[in-house]
Length: 163
Image (cartoon, helix red, strand yellow):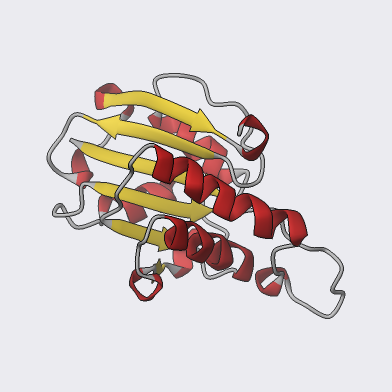
């Protein structure tokens, strides 16, 4: 069984004209929502084997705040360049390259692709994911290369205003 958590980064700031899109930090709400979602995952007793994040500051900050709440070592967060500006096939490639020893993976990325990716894999329709939303899917397979909607089970969808 493989478990995949797909998370949209928390709310970012648009108030820095001199920063590139990749450099935009979290705003106050994002800095509150990311750890709150980490706490929501912790309440479910979730243990991650692998945490993957886009190199964008807002995504990496989200990953670090969630990791802290789950007692996942920040230095083990893997930055995957291809998650930034990814297409659905790009994200599928990233997940299918995960080591099979990792049964539980969290991927922190960006919309609209993260929502589209969730819908490609989920047997249930996932609404447009707001910032810091998380979808959990479980797959009845032994290898990440085998994940598919046909062996997927929708487990939960959570977001900050739901907590």
